[in-house]
Length: 133
Image (cartoon, rainbow, N blue to C red):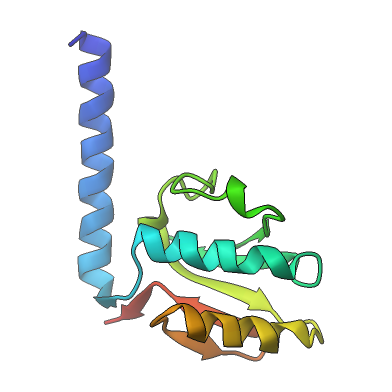
């Protein structure tokens, strides 16, 4: 292994350790896995363009970011997001209501997919990745 590759691996390992530390310090439960995030994001595809956007929050920041929902299921895999680069970083994803009646249909589909921690907020339907301590 070259020195450059070794340095990159060490840097990645430190980032993972830091992420694990943040998660263990700030959250008491984890509800999602990569497979569940992929399943959820694929389930959103048929609702495009009625549900075009989602907001999301990462575990290490208070900033809420916004992303378009993918139109085609085959495009979603374990590396669909550019940032976050891994699903483990996601604290929650929220699908904004914006007066959209299709979100109720989407909520029913989510319940049929499996066990997800859902929270209705004043702005939309939130899927929790973690529970706060």
